[in-house]
Amino acid sequence: MAEIRTAFRQELEDMERTLLGVADKAEQMVQKAVEAFTTGDLDRAEEVIAADESIDETYLDIHNRWMNLMARQQPLAGDLRLMSMLLHVNTTLERMGDQTVNIAKLTRATDGLPRVDAIVERLQEMGDLVRAMIRTVIEAVIRRDADEARLLPAMDEPVDRLNRDMYQEVVKVGHDPRRLEWATKAMMVARALERVGDQVVDIGEQLVFLLTGERVEFNEVGLGGMPHSG
Amino acid sequence: MVNLPTARQTTRETMEDTQTQAATARPAAPTDSTPADAVMRVEGLNVYYGDFLAVKDVTLRFARHEITALIGPSGCGKSTVLRSLNRMNDLIPNARVEGAVFFNDQDIYDPDVDPVEVRRRVGMVFQKPNPFPKSIYENVAWGARINGFKGKRGELDDLVERALRQAALWDEVKDKLHESGYSLSGGQQQRLCIARALAPNPEVLLMDEPASALDPIATLRIEELMLSLKEQYTIIIVTHNMQQAGRVSDRTAFFSVEVDERGQRTGKLVEFDLTDKLFTQPAMKETEDYITGRFG
Image (cartoon, rainbow over all chains, first blue to last red):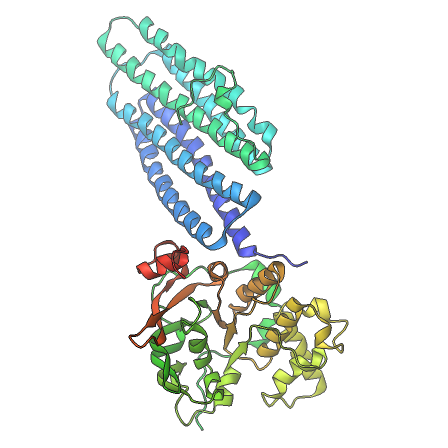
């Protein structure tokens, strides 16, 4: 039988492809934001802020297209779950972009302050871990692989741990007010990266819902994650 | 008699297989609220049946290579407006039209215009599949013959094949072209009627509830066909099915009914806009109430 509703399916696929492109961009923004903060590179920070503007534009565009598709096509079953995921992922990616902007702005705020090597290393590690998570979730979505999505909470665990331990690292800095100021801002960077990690896990949950119809909250399954705060 | 003007050079040669073309490229959705390139325009249209004013003061533009849906409750005049676009109302005794209907800037109600020529250029598909009690081949060939086709048999064969391909029916009937049109399923019969309507090579195709007698899958196939046909034709569809209007149309005109002090019901155009806009942010409360099911 000839294929039907091809325009609807093309639009669904195109929206998904666009969002995967945004996820790819978010990964690059995490890399640039961490690089900017840990090296004090203001130009890099500005690149992140500029990139977020295009993410915001895409967010609005996807939202409009989503509204139109919902109004016109009344998707059901798997299509409806995919629509649900696309709306959720669109919001999540927009917020991930905002977290990288937070890091970029902290770079501005710490311009000229001395950095602490031990903390720089930890932030770089967190950035690498979060980026690996983003790549994993992109792969999982492309391959429609729920098992791969289920790996994400375990990948997020060290990110959470590094964030929790950051306070101790700041205490170790001592009393130099300039080093201390940089370190407290670094704590906020760690918190932003930890949030990105949670957001990636959230996308994984959406994928499992798409594939199985099962509602999961990975962060509550006792893998040591922070309480899920949306 | 004046000849109806044409705004496009017919490119039959390039229409070999619309199904294949449709799969590779679709035109982008329109974004302009008022279509600039209108193949048909209706201005200040009133249609009477005797003394009864069925629909009043309709002004609309139908964009070329788009699908425009006319929706609204029963008695709102949408089918009356559709039938006025190819002078089908002329066939109803006592029907009278005021205002103007332009086809490529020629008023089709000009006394010098031949209504048969209008109906050739502006074809029509009806609610119920109505193939003739003839073979599949003859059903389509008829469409060409009324257009004065006098070519050789081989040319007629080509024309029949082309129309059936455009109607996404060829693969299903190519081995039984000389069987009766009635041997086909309801959905196939409707696509046969679409092939017959395409055979005279119209510019505009009017469709009056073309899928309301069909099952959901046959309905979706007709809709898919409409989306592929709009690359060569302009389609204007009347539908009771709002979801169908949403699925296929680029623009939607919403009609409603006004009741006067004597209880006489007259159809009117309430709102006309891009379907995306009308279905997500209608400007008129009456439209919102209808499409959300608060009225009707």
